[in-house]
Amino acid sequence: MATKSKMIGNRKLKVGGRKSSAFRFPPSAAPRFLAKPTFFKATMAIVQKDLAAEFRSRELLSAMLVFSMLVILIFNFALELDIKVRQSVTAGVLWTTFAFAGTLGLNRSMAVEKDRGCLDGLLLAPVDRSAIFFGKAISNLAFMLIVEAIVLPLYALLYNEVRIFQPAFLGVILLGSIGYIAVGTLLSAMSVQTRTRDVLLPILLFPVAIPVLLASVKASGGLLNNATFAEILTPLNLLIVYDVIFIAVAFMVFDFVVEE
Amino acid sequence: MEITPDTSGYMIAGYIITFLTMCIYVFSIYRRNKNLKQDLETLKSLDTKKTKKK
Amino acid sequence: MQSKPIVLSILDVVSIIVLGVAAYLALVFAPTELVMGDVQRVFYFHVGTAWVGLLGFILAAIAGIAYLTTKDMKWDRFEVAAVEVSTMFFFITIVLGSIWARPVWNTWWTWDPRLTTAAVTELIYIAYFMLRQGIEDPEKRARFGAVYTLLGGLSAPITFMVIRLFRTIHPVVIGSQSAEAQGGFSMTTDMRTAFFFSLFAFTIIFIDLIWHRIRLGRLQDKVEELKLNLSL
Image (cartoon, rainbow over the protein chains, first blue to last red):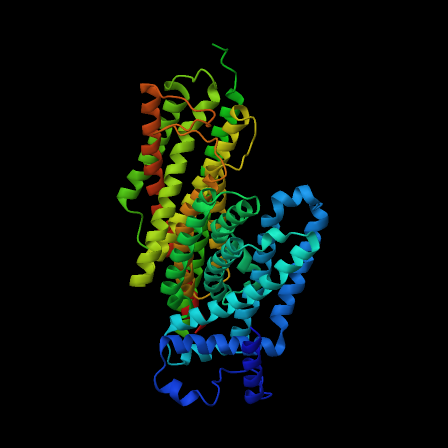
């Protein structure tokens, strides 16, 4: 992580003080890229652009983080998170927090593209449209994972909840985030193009994302309560099924969503 | 065998709501249809006026 | 606007007749269930509306795919019609279920898989209409609508499976009965007659209403088109 951010830091110096008003490739990579953009390279270029822009402004991550902490604070008093209650609601509290913070990030990430005309620039670029989807989805996922990577230890610290740090639990968090972001990226691309934009995303996203949220809560809650692997196998399977189906569908229909 | 409870009140309420909802929906289609037809007439008359001017 | 086709007029009359007959069968003809009493008669319309509600949502998802592949506006009109009529029927299903649950389960509502899935599905399709309202361009509206019905159609069954992990008390009348289910019963021949007739009746009414809604959609498109022409 440290080397990666350093690398991006260097890039930031190279690109200079330019505001990200349009899609720009790093100078060194541009000619090669434009000559023959492979799917993977195009995707990665978008991810890089998003991460570089975010590490410069940090507006999205800081908003998501502060918001997450506030949600946890509110839950603390609303649910009286004493040791007994926490036993059963930790997974629920965490997932609610991530879902809300995720909507915030998804909205912002797509609104920036739309407002600054980036989306049109991206669409004009000679790359596969689904590469744009994967690019946006991966950077959105990165933001969400970064937020989770900060919120989880904080939660563990605040509530002395070391059970969080088991690989299986983190795996469930990852699977859940992937599914949530896949649908979220697609729907946010739709909602930014409507009149009611910011208001619409959670309304569109939550009912469709309910399976992924519930399966994640079930699986991660089970893990926290020392359930056997067989017990969490069903929610885990459903989670994987949801991820696969929705990544595939989002990949297929993204074209229709950004088409002009 | 226990005595069959009298739950006819619930049944009547259920069927009233069912028929009421369907009536409201049919009426809403009728109203929208009527309004649209009115709009269509207005637009058509406007259209002919416009073409006459030209 | 072409005048009302004769078949549709006939279908209107048939719909009213079958609705009347279905109501008669459910309210008078079918015997009273002994444990639950008269409230059980709600069941015939409950399943009838639930069936067409589900049918409509499946048809809407198929119409969504058809629209995305053909880009023919007729599929969009069909999709809107199916979603709207189904949302109305599903609302009836939920209300009837709730009314039945009050005396039988002793609660208006419980977070059972079927109930929750029904509620979530209803919310998805309310969101669908909010999405459409926010878009002015008819072509874009159709595209987004199609994508959303597709997502909704895919997520609803997974929602059902996920919530089943929690628990259920909803009776399964056709097929195997869960041990935990409360309020189940076995149907007599007369009950079956009423049951299947109500399924049939609601299918007819469903087709009739969809047809009307499609015609309304056509009219809407025409008005919108004329408005656009005039403003040019």
